[in-house]
Length: 530
Ligand code: F6P
Image (spheres, rainbow, N blue to C red):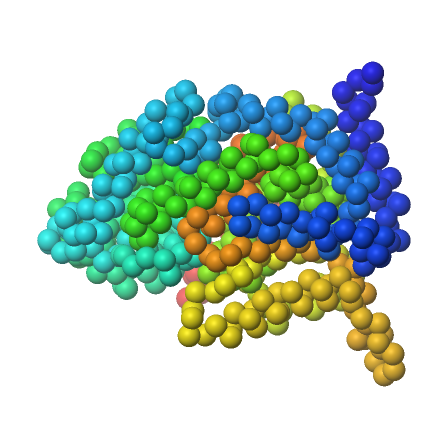
């Protein structure tokens, strides 16, 4: 029998062979060649419908993609993740965001005993705030929540609060993430310090942006609501409980989580406290239930019916085999407008790596560059390049079958018509005759997938995000990379620390690079000229 490494190499070669074989076959022709293509290249999963028939994958290529995933041991890796093995090898940590979604009363993996008691504390805290039992220092009911956090401590909660606002009424959520004072300066004047609850959300509680903003907001609160206010109006979410105490947060208002939860996978942890406060605990639990339903599906569905697996395989086909460098995320749902940003972190921070688990150079391309905008806005901006540019961008469309604005139901039909029209036009193209034919020609044959969900509910959002998490996991398994560390972000942070005294003029430039030195000189000159 062929050794595993050789088998693996030959799986990639086979796939390159399929790519060469299909290079001259337009996607449209695959529909004539494969009578059941629509049904064979789509699947239902707990109310979701995923269509990947508008891609240049045929049955033979799909068989080889499945063979590749099997050869890489995606099932064993999945079992290891769910069981809490330390698959984040470079940080020697387990990866257990799925444990956060296990229903209360059911068994959790070893070391996760705090999950459900913490969830109960979150529920009590948020219900007491929402119902006015816990009040501000001045005795007022809270009207606003300010979440201070960045990256995974902001993107997921901000996405969920924006996406699900239509589901529940509660205090309004605001998000402060950027070190740029312009953001704090635009948010704080709109907040009433007597009715605002502040949550400092940071897994490490050392992130410079978050801690700088937290100190600034505390000063603002002391100045505007009195020195007693932060004690009552600050809460914290973190894995670093001693640091929360050192910052002066009342321990009753500190919600911890284990180091087996990665920042970009932490929406389901106490990092989601702001979501619970803004939308209510029922909505948050529904989101967890949706994610758990996707976990169960991922764990048990046969491979040809396994949504995260097939989603990942299509991405591997596009990025590692066809070599398309980017992927556009196109939610035809205004409420999902932060989804591209959320997925940028989830996908690029997870799979934007150049070495395998064992530290060898990655022989394949790493994760795609993710970008996108809500449809239909994107149609009037960059879709021109999607249709006629000479680089292919696989598109991922997402749309709800029903909208949530009954008075404007005709808008939703227009939205769906536009979404379906785009995937159809990208695939079919047009070859007009006559004047300006060359300019009007759309080559077509541009691949896309479409995911339809019944309606945007907390449960569905949970499903959608867990789908993406598991798809990232499968892609990482196939590439044999550690999807759960992020060493690349450290260098820039360290350099910023070293440059700070130079920017402040406290230290001479020394031996920094000539380009950076001249940028600094220009900053100083421009400041001096003011
Ligand atoms: O910059 C990288 C990162 O570590 C992300 O992985 C993380 O989500 C973000 O910073 C915020 O980290 P923390 O929650 O520890 O403040």
